Image (cartoon, rainbow, N blue to C red; front, side):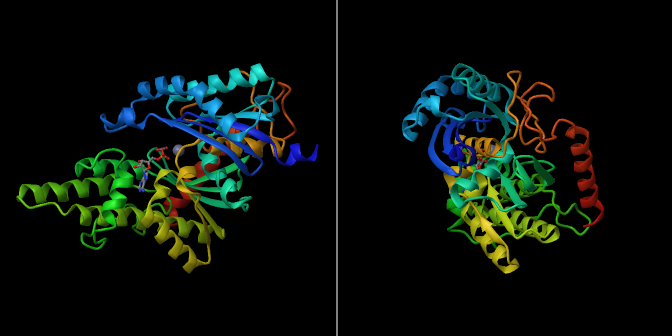
Length: 384
Ligand code: KG4
Ligand code: ZN
């Protein structure tokens, strides 16, 4: 059946952090995006507590799957596959999703696809803006990750160009918000305050932007410390902290570095498309500055709507559907959660010789992929 090959009906489960996401897609069409978040349960701790998240996933899983099926108006027996985030993420949280996906896939007799969380963040844009051009450049920025990725094939070939060497971009927003007593998560509230502030009021440092620094890596820890020191000095002097100006100036430093490096990567690699994903992609200033800098450089910018940028199940379903459409091999029943799954492992296929393979050669790729990462980071170090 032609429809089945081109537009597989796939359910995706995401539990890598504090969102229990279940999405259903048909090819590039979003049918349902059900999310249950435990973010409120973590707020008083100022960050995600892994055990609390795992417990919340367990409680939310079955009702969220049911809600997604109802919303999509499809029957589970019509699914062409079940996809799940195999990693990276919190081990206990991932385990709940992987176990649920296995149980549903086994009971329904459907193929199971363990997929990579980061590749899913990229692939979700197909639901918003249609097929991704290949290669695609992606800037992924959230509370857990900050990466620049080059994706010649979203189902089998994603290459890390650079990532943060300390805090993730969203983490920096969360930590600065904490110093300003603005609550958790910090991104949305800093974004709001920043609109009233002057981004040039304080010149905060731009990490790793020197001529000898790695071109595509990020560092936000020094910036966070500089902001904290600045605020401490004001308080010590008995002066009022200008919250809006601090928020705007801090945000400007983060966004300046992110967009500068992303545009540079596009130019260096000859890629004329940039996608931005992850929770921080909701940031108003990031969207505006990326838009302007991409236009100036002749690059087309693709940013999904905020709900598809934060962790969700639709992104996992989107990548699962692409795996099915391109005939990638399914995972085996031995699929396990891998909290540090490398981004180069776009999915976790069954081992060669276990009968599920459809003739693509992924099994021998590990050593080679890691060599490739090494080569790229060396390039960054010496050719900036
Ligand atoms: O993708 P996400 O929901 O979860 C993961 O971390 O994987 O991202 C959450 C992060 C938090 O650090 C939050 O502060 C940040 O995204 N965030 C924002 C904004 N909205 C969410 N950061 C800056 N500006 C925003 N508008
Ligand atoms: Zn994420």
